[in-house]
Length: 77
Image 1 (tube, rainbow, N blue to C red):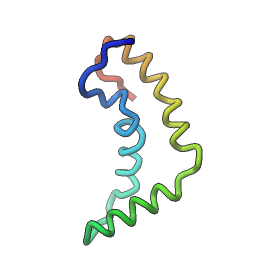
Image 2: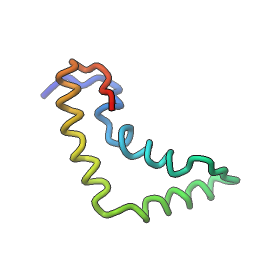
Image 3: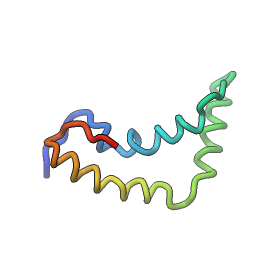
């Protein structure tokens, strides 16, 4: 086991591949209600390829190695 910083966007799957892609898909859109945001989010996830999450998790290995090499410093893309 390695020590893990309390907050590390480099190692959190939602911060490095899930939310940035969701944010890009919402770029330029304006929502009038929470219900519209929920509906758009549900539609976004429904349209993802079945391998989306697995592919994103597989990319973590590279980031783990980089984080170890950099002794916990930020991993550039």
